[in-house]
Image 1 (cartoon, each protein chain N blue to C red):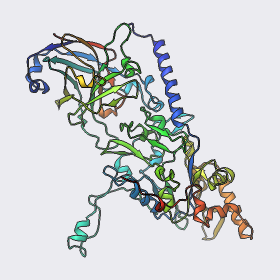
Image 2: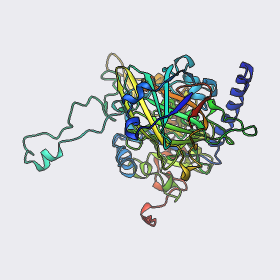
Image 3: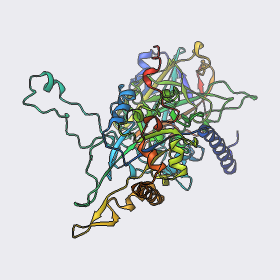
Image 4: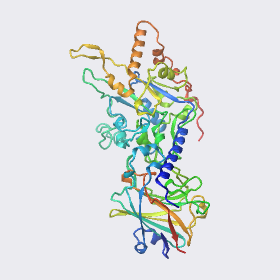
Amino acid sequence: MAEPSEEQKAQRAKDLATEAKSQKAQLRQCKRQVAMVFDLNKCLGCQTCVVACKTLWTRDEGMEYMWWATVNTQPGKGTPRDWENMGGGFRDEEPQSGKLPTRRDFGEAWDFNYDEVFFGGKGNSVHLQPSGDPDWGPNWDEDQGGGQYPNSFYFYMPRICNHCTHPACLEACPRNAIYKREEDGIVLISEERCKGYRFCMEACPYKKIYFNHTRQLSQKCIFCYPRVEKGVAPACARQCPGRLRFVGFLDDENGPIYKLVKKWEVALPLHAERGTQPNVYYVPPISPPRFDADGNIDESKPRIPTEYLKYLFGDKVEGALATLKAEMAKTKAGGKSEILDTLIVYEWKSLFGPFTKDPAELEPRKV
Amino acid sequence: MQCKKLTASREQLLDPVAPAWNSIPGEPLTMAATPLANQPSEYIKASRDEKQIGKVRNLMVQAVHNEQDIFIRLSWEDASENVAITDNNQFPDGCGILMPLNASDAQHPDPPIDEMGSKDAPVNAWFWRADFKDEPRNTIAHGLGTTQFSKKSPIQSKSTWGNGAWAVVFMRPLAVPDQKDEMTQLAAGKSVKVGFAVWEGSNGERAGVKSFSKEWRELALES
């Protein structure tokens, strides 16, 4: 058979690309999209969401270093360390090269000397400590934050997989192992199809994909889909004592998510410039004013630099903060604010749209 | 490409450093990067440079059979021995042998070698990876990004790395009647089309990012 000409090869490459594109479009397609809103003004950094997720999903062998849900102090290096500078995502629709975070970057699961301290008779002489000399962990730079006294500042930022509308991971996988569920837009990795190549890990700009070294495949937050299917909110949201994690469908015009994101525009996506259209939104933190050089309060300048919030949440953050402040002024003057009432969450059920069912009421799965 | 008939035991031929291999003629192959434009991922296309793909450019192929089993020995120079996925950014070395699953004829052209076969013309690959503990996988593919391991694999291997080179011997029964849908059937006196691939772990090569032997070669099994 004659060797195909350069022209034929180029045409074939084009045809393959067209076919791949239509397959990817199909994998992205969904009728509805679940979303979350995190109100950063209420996050205490208590890590209850993190542990709720860990206990439910990532206790098996190979998952020791996985934390599908994380909470980090901002400004900070985050989890994995320095993830914001690891590339990935899209620029002008073009996929951007990304780095693979190492296990050390995520923070290895440390071994502690429990036996020695609790059962070895050395409870009074030996400290409980991790073995080795760890130099990073998933919450290593907690409460360090930024700024100089008396204008130091920080806030907590919870993160999960963003279940993006245009997921970089889905686009990157050469095996079409990643897809959005048609009924709710949850992004899942098929463990049947995944071969652990880790292009998804490279491409995700949020670095929310982990490699399971025991099973040799990639894993990530599944938005607790088995709970969602039964009308139960994801564990991280249900367990949050701060009532700051809203869950619902993005198109539910009567739900808090739609109102906070679309109607009032007080909840914004994180690093939207990465082009993946994330479906987790953040109510930005309102900060106290700065002190000037003489130690007087300068109401004109917020403690958290607006530039930093713009870096995280984009230019619309100014509008969102202005709306929140105006609403606060309204209530201070004795008025009513639907926005603030929504964010206060007087009744916990108002957080979860159609996902308010008590998990204790479910029939245990028969194994 | 010749696959001579030899009277030797499995043990003698499965060992990549066995003296028997010294007298078996080899065929040196020039390998090339897999075409980046064909990669089934816009991310891979955007993040890689074809010039950097396929670090291993020379592969030596030797093949013999003893009427029961076929033995194919692949060897190539590789200064770095990558034997395990020690971290998220580490990849093991690997190599593979590709064959059309079904014999081709006038009505059934050869499967496209640079597209891992097609829906109508599947391919069968023998896949060795340095971290598989010499338990190579038997793989079927119907096109780019479609490889699946079969549950059973009668393929065996022995491998060694030393003096900056890998040597891997694959062994398989010529006929595998209970896996006709998953394995190319071989027989003395017949020919089979073959292709080869090498993954250089230190270069982050995995999946379709590898070097390959560009076109099908005819491997003639001596009768």
